[in-house]
Image 1 (cartoon, rainbow, N blue to C red):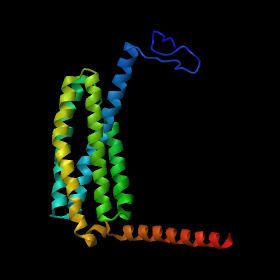
Image 2 (image 1 turned 45 degrees about the horizontal axis):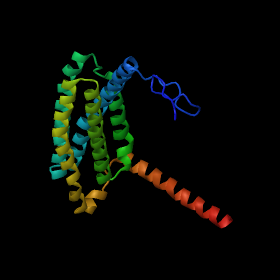
Image 3 (image 1 turned 45 degrees about the vertical axis):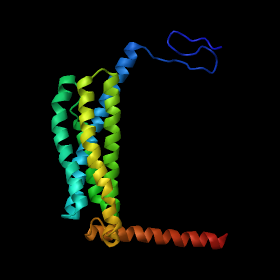
Image 4 (image 1 turned 180 degrees about the vertical axis):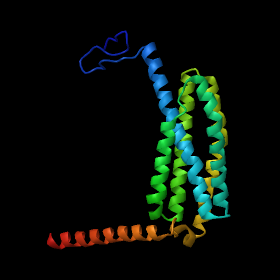
Amino acid sequence: MQELQSNGATNVEGGLLGDESGPQVESRRGREFLTTLVRELFQTERSAMIHPRIEAERLGDVPPAHAMRAVSTHAEAALSEIRPLLRERGLPISAGGRMVGEAFSALRDHLADHLLSTERSYRGTLLGMRHGVDLVELLQYVATVEGDTPLAAWCARWLSMRRPLVEAVADELAWFAARPMRATRAAKDDVVAHLLRGLVNGVELAAQRLRRLVTFAG
């Protein structure tokens, strides 16, 4: 049988080597993990505030837009609420996370959304919301392990409110199913969108022709 070293690693060849586990190291790593998740929280919540609002404006006064706006409103309130809680704990009020969120928002608005249909843009925003739920669930677990009861409780409240809102957004996919013309319409319909879609179509056509030439040559 393998003998266990005091740090939990095995001392036989091929076993675990160099395990740094220990109370002090685990505590430091836990704090670093918590800090990383908090920074990501600012990024995802900023996206959850901005992108659903954009989707709602594009869709107009229809049920999917109402569901999107509800998530955006909750994200805005959550960002205001979490700041003082994090300051009390010395955790980052993340300018970095905010900047990353803004960069992703700009990239999506100026490039990606020009190539997406309305329903694909909607589903992309929904995917980001689901990522946010997973993130806060993990943050709750880590806060609990770290003994941060108030932060874990905040996460639990957030989840109790956000999950139903995200589920409502998902339920509105049925609205698109009943309106295929609206669903397949371009999310953004401007000169840049037409140019980009034309470029993509041209590249796809060229690729098809190249594949046919390769097939004939073979």
